[in-house]
Length: 171
Image (cartoon, rainbow, N blue to C red; front, side, top):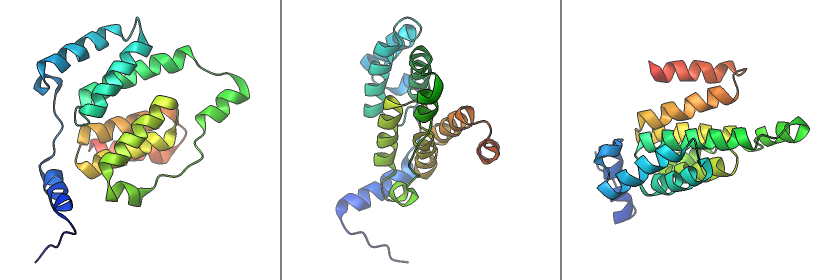
């Protein structure tokens, strides 16, 4: 079996996918660990500032699931503080797009980053959480995929398919 790659970049990308794994916070640089620790302490007091710090850390270290989980906690605090009521809240929760699975398969890292940006804008974006889950699964990042499916289910608990998918991922 001979594999052909269109460029050297695609070869390295394919090799990198094979060896990818999620890293804990304690394996990050010491200065980044300090930022994560400070941001974690600020989630209850200053969730906007904590989310800003953690968002930048997640962009720089997309394989750290613990940091992504802390970011979600800050985003939940922000979403709770700025929650819209009435019809505006209903439309804010809707996502008018579909998950582009072919784009996730072509470049899962880009899809992961795009979904993070969408969640920064609107935490209730169901499509973005599904993209996180699928991109994490595509990259072999089990905790990231589970995190995506958990928030997908928490946002729309009436969707039985999301609950079944979450249970399948846990198994």
